[in-house]
Image (cartoon, rainbow, N blue to C red; front, side, top):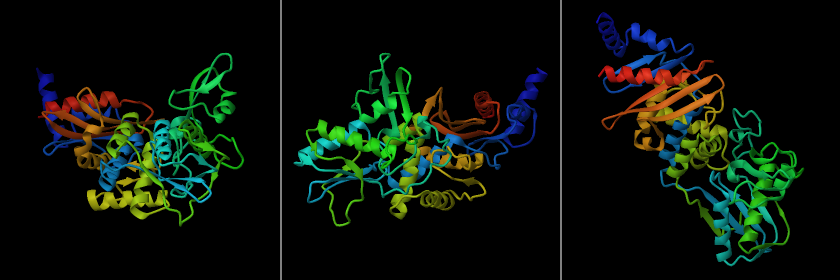
Length: 399
């Protein structure tokens, strides 16, 4: 009975912020980190004003700013032009879902406009500056895929290699491309998905743009449009009007659902750069997008750089720093869009994971009420699940 009474008293003092036995029970799971659960009447927190690396929980902020700046029904655009000698120009504006299916739909639309034969395919990437991706390990892993103004299939390539050495596309919606044959030679049998950004295939064009050129060319031919020559990088003449402005079939809300569900770094950084593009104009740049974030945080949420620093949109960069207090403020503002987060056993959740970084941000659901919480652990021991269970129990017992 004495133990039960002590536990109840400990819960009560924790909720009102004083040190107690229950704080010890929670903080024994935290060697370097912070946690905060906050409702209108209760606060359970530890080191909530200190800054930590958030990893992919930062995607909640990227999603929030994109939704408030662009709107849930916003659709990414790609513009198409034809000059007097039947050259096709393709200008990208950062569409993160420029997939094989979407490109086939575009090519069908071009065919319906009367386009039957083209000379060259020109790829225009000038809407985005060419900058290194913050936090990238420069690997061929898909999570390291870089952003770009004109990027197809998330800058990752699926290749199928049979035991006899036969190479084909690793997904039915994407035709077998010449670059697959070259890249597949050194791959083991099976289906491999790789980030093609760092691969060297052509001295005159980057691998991502070669991918875009080969895929558009293949889908144009599949749609009945013949190509007389080849593809290359070239800006659209300023006097040339577009013949087609394609709006992606997915609106921003659907894009964000997949971004958050799969924690896709490529999509998040495309969104991050697009916020700068649509706020400050072309070309999109990291500095423009960082300014958008800083201005939003200060003017809308009252958060200063001493509470949060944003380096990229995905959370991949370790220069991102945030307090649990700031993340909970972001989550408070994100409540109208909370349905975009995964529901895991009655908790709406976004995780963030890197080596030595284990984070959670989301909401405890109770009687249709959403209570935001944040866990930021920058330590070798991943205790976030155990910590979340104890925080959830403590919060509910304290009511």
